[in-house]
Length: 110
Length: 126
Image (tube, rainbow over the protein chains, first blue to last red):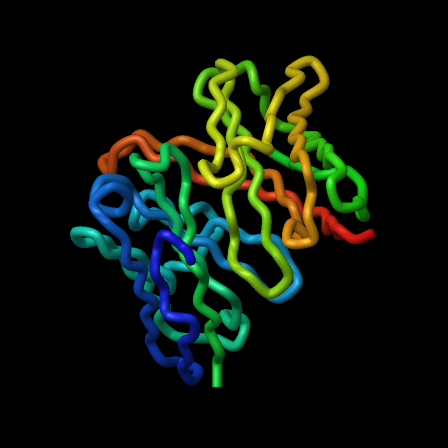
């Protein structure tokens, strides 16, 4: 059971906009910034969004993040087949005194 | 360019101790603010944070595994070592190490894993 709650799956067609939610609590998302990771099949996770809405160099602006209260969201616009991957949210938890991850969302491009 | 790479045994027996080494380049663990973390992923399951060590030798452990974990650093060798005692088949997973970056922007101090190793699959079986 992950500390952060994500839907197990999401889907969309090419060109669509999809969002993935991440729900936490006051001790984690409510207090700290949220990061998102993309894990393509058979590869290591890759940092996609940090500090709620910042994109590392090289990440397309089709990916965006937001946070409100104890929840966060990842939005992917102009969905492409290569976006098919697992997506994980993560943040620091002040009660656990360490990073926590969501359970992951498997994105399927139909 | 930052790189990190994990090494260690691919197979351990139940009750044995696992020792994994993370060898990195492109940064120094003696530089203020720098950290290295370990994260594992059982086959088909989610990511789970294990441990984190900072430039000042401050250490953090997952509360659920704290009694079994030890993380150390060797700054001169650019290595971080993780040991996990009393291994069990449920510990079968890919173990990743990662550089822990720090952002101090408008969102406040935020630690994130910005460079990951490919991981090493550790199977626990007799």
